[in-house]
Image (cartoon, rainbow, N blue to C red; front, side):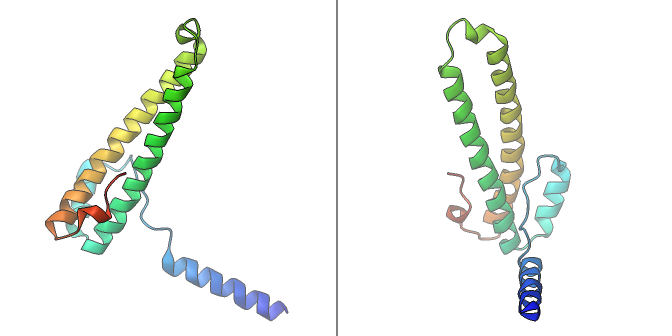
Length: 125
């Protein structure tokens, strides 16, 4: 029983280490570093990275929609209060993150397309 659990655990670790977590979208990576990295990547690597950025962009867009909904439910008095200020601050932060993600995504997507990649595989919904 213990050997079976140990073997299963080791197998799971091996699979996760081979598969990895995928490339992570990083808004803090300098643009020049992104450009240099993209130049060295294969079509498959570019596709994987662009998809991770597209997924993150879609998530941020969803968060922006939630914030719009929150703002639309506020009364006129609340729009000038602390609650609205906090919501607007969060919206500004999300907007900045969305812009940074989009800029980096665009670099990977352009290189992907230049190498013959199919943009429909990495498009942002």
